Every structure is written in structure tokens, then in C-alpha cells.
Length: 436
Ligand code: DLL
Image 1 (cartoon, rainbow, N blue to C red):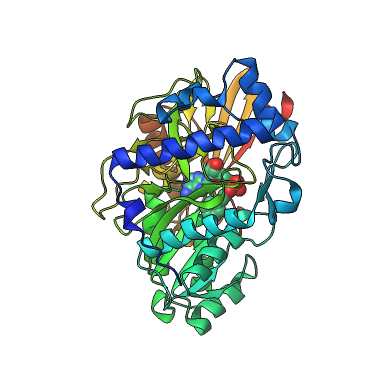
Image 2 (cartoon, rainbow, N blue to C red):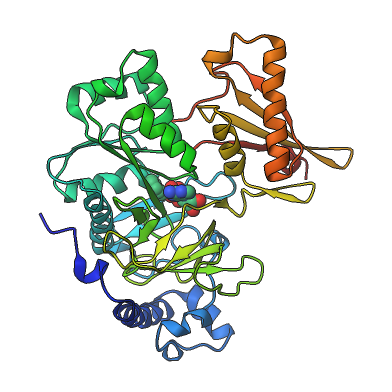
């Protein structure tokens, strides 16, 4: 078993990190120029040669990569190694258009396991843990990503995958799982199932959980921590860059440490592409500097976040990213006002709607955008009078209006009437897109 607390890298001075990133950036730019016709063509088109990239200060000269580039070269056109060096293939869960195919060499898989192992170590996980993986196994990177890191730290890995939620609860109880990993919405579904089965947090042994793959709020974190009796850590990643483990919270729970020795983050203005100063909110962009099979350069994630370069109380100096507020393509524009589903979720949780089961239905009627919010009632106030329910609907409407400046019609619906998910949740139905 290796040592997955690596202070030489994780506590490096900013200057040393920039030097390491510069060296690796020069190498990767040469590799993609020589091996990926798409990158060579893009660089030739703007008259840029690998020798023009002399340090990380030149990163901004490089062209961006988008999901469309991966679609245009589907399935393997952006790979930088011959296929016989590719050791694993995954694909993103794209809901529209072609899915995005990603590849890993044996060394890429080692690096992936290392960064996830680093994340597990940073919250005190290790050999003594029973690591319950409830992310889906398969082309999605969640299951095998967490599995690899947990194996590397020497934990007893329990590869449950998603589904059969009652059985999940039974396994949590009987196998003594101490760490769980799944989407935050599935964590709440498991909590709900536990409650239905009469199982309390004291009957299980969980102490920590790694939750990610979708946006979630601080309120949801508190809810998961309370109902499962554990510390809930945020883990971020995307298949195009690697999978889970691109960034993860440490025990301080104060932002996610980016594995910057492998993935260089930038924040850009999503409209102009201009690089924004430290601390500004914008679109997150990553450059893979050590990846062999699919080293993407300045990949536009569409995730809206901020970076913090201040050292963390845990002693690590790697840059931290905040919880992504959502994807720029999830942002709704309703009568000119920008709204992220996560903002609506915060309002609901603040008003005491414990389980964030809600759906936003956007439509266009007579050229006017309309927003209807369906919110599931808690079993506790399901027995309320009609007047009582109407009062709660009014309360939500007023709060949305005063805090987010959006006018919405709000409807409380019966407990458990909105669908549950074992993976990523879908909170928005935008009927305008279906019409356009
Ligand atoms: O969701 C990888 C992953 C698996 C991450 C398990 C964490 C845990 P994709 O399916 O390619 O990969 O989706 C990537 O999910 O661009 C974000 O929009 C979103 N996302 C991932 N982690 C978080 C997070 C996996 N912690 C897309 N918070 C990303 C908010 C997240 N959004």
C-alpha cells in the first residue's frame, strides 16, 4: 500500500506548483500537437507552435476544447495514444446527442486511483474502513472511480452499485459499512428508505460519505449528515477530465482541493472566454497535464464555480474550488432573470422542506415564460388543512420572489409523488426547449 498523503505535492509552495505545472504543460502540448490531428489543426490555425508554450503563463494562448470537439471526433478521434495502449473506456451519461467517449492508459488508471486515494486519505479514510460504493458501475465513472481509490487505500471495498435500496440498507447494517459514496440525491433516498424500514443512524456504522456527480447545497449536506449520521464530503469530477477525484474536500470541509499537479484549473468568463482573476466566479476550465490517452487542453466544463488559492487550515496548499453553483447550461433564464435550480433548493430547505424533492416546470405561454414549482410535502404536514397548505405555498412563493426575484406558481404535492433517483437527479423540465 502506498502513502496517499503526499505533502511534497499537496503542501508545495505556489511557486513550486507553478514550476511543476509549467514543465508538465510544455510536455502535454507537444504530445497533443504531435499525436492529435484536431489539436494540431487548431494550433496551426492560430499560428501557435508547441515551442511558444514556455510556462503556465502561456496557457491562455491555447485554444479551448469543448464537448462539441469530442462529439465531432467521436468516438476516439481526440485520443493521443494508439488504441493498443488504451486500457479502459468510459462514456459520459450525455442526455442529448452522442455520448462522449473517454479512454485511459494503464498509467492514467493509476493516476486516477491515486487522486481518489488522496481524497479518501484527506478525510481520514483508510485500511480499516468498509467502503460502500453505491455509484453506478459501468460506463459511468462514479462506481469504478471510487472503487479504484478505495482499493488503493486498502479499505474493504463493497461494490454494491446502485439500486435495490432496501438491500443497500441491509448491507449498510450487516456488513458494517463505514464510508459510503453515491449521489447526494441517492443518499437522501437511502435515508428515506432507512426510516421506512425503522433503521436509525445508530443502527448503522457510517462515519463519512463522498457525495458528488451533481450540484447539491449546504442545506442538503446538513440534511444528509443528520439523517445518515455521518460527515458528508463533496467530491467533484467529470469523465472528460478523469472522473471523480479531480477535486475533493478535506476534513475541513472548506472547498474542494483540486489535484492540480494533474489538472490545471482556470476560471473564465463564459461569454468572452477571458481568464478571470483569482476569486471571481465563472466557468471552470481544466487542462490535463499528465493524462496519456485523452489529454484535453483547456476543456470547458460549463460548471460555474470560484477558485481559492489561500492555503487551507488542513495544511494543503492546492487551490480549492467552491461547490459548483450548477452548469451554465442548467441556468434558467425566466423572464430575463437567471435562476439555478440549486438556488430554489436552498430556499425550500431554508423554509423547512426537509427532503429536497422538487421539480421546476418551465413553459412559454403567449410569449411569456412561466415557472411552476412542484414541491413534495413532508408526511408531517400532509394532514394539514387546505388553508394550511395554501399558506405554505404562499410562503414559498413570497420567499422566491424576495430572495431570487422570480415569480413562480407553487404547488405542494403528495409525499413521495415525485420520482426518486439512484443516480443524478433531474429537477428541471423545460418545455420551451421541446417547442423550439
Ligand atoms: O459525474 C463524475 C463523478 C462521479 C463525480 C462521482 C463525482 C462523483 P460526468 O457524468 O461526466 O462525471 O458528469 C460531470 O457532473 O461537469 C458537473 O456538472 C457535475 N458534477 C460532478 N461532481 C459534482 C459536484 C461525473 N461535486 C458533471 N458538485 C460535472 C456539483 C458536480 N456538480
